[in-house]
Image 1: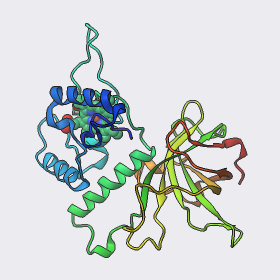
Image 2 (image 1 turned 120 degrees about the vertical axis):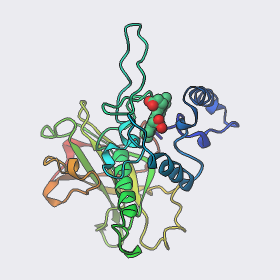
Image 3 (image 1 turned 90 degrees about the horizontal axis):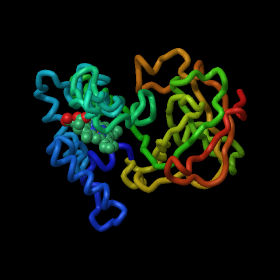
Length: 282
Ligand code: HEC
């Protein structure tokens, strides 16, 4: 959603009239920056191979796309969390920087501790452990059964005590009408930071059902939360734990409060499901 269309050539569709501008823009970027603009390839495997090859031989004055020694210092993280380069005296952008302080010609596309940052970081940390031989067997691999969706949860009127930029995690529990209780395990999760307008926004990650049969039978691309009642539990990173461990899930010690939402879930930030922070109860 956030790297389109600049780095996602395979998502551009010539037959879609809505993509016309995006295709023209991408062509221009390719002409200026060459193949390095095409970060996300047609399959995850090709994307990873491309990232690995490029990161194996870091060039002087340039951080690697994936930094296995220090995942937070990967260009894949630093570019989208950095602003545009400064302008020179003629009002033209200076050359974008690939070393710290990094600047990004795409501008700010991801915030430290939002849901994309968390998943990028978790993935690069995991990748580093794999190639660092830190998993003895396949059984040690984390059971990663969260899948990104386009459904967005927005908390508005964040409580007074939530400082701007603090990380907030929101776990979604579904109502079970047979058992007349909320699901023990969350069915969805997201994370964001408190904005200056006292909101927290995040696209949901959905938990693949345990009976999804190796997850391959589950429609991970098209899955949505069904219409119904949901309990949202909020956890606030007041102790700054995410700074040391961006992939962490906050725990009961960080619990703030909960409230319910109802009805259908739509896609996209404009149609976010809104939760009023003033309704949160312990
Ligand atoms: C509006 C267009 C645009 C969007 C959206 C965008 N970028 Fe970029 N990005 C650029 C341009 C232009 C460059 C080349 C200039 C530069 O290095 O800053 C670039 C460069 C990069 C590079 C360095 C590539 C290299 O090998 O030199 C990385 C990594 C990167 N972007 C990551 C991201 C990620 C991840 C996202 C999404 C979360 C993103 N960008 C969103 C325009 C964009």
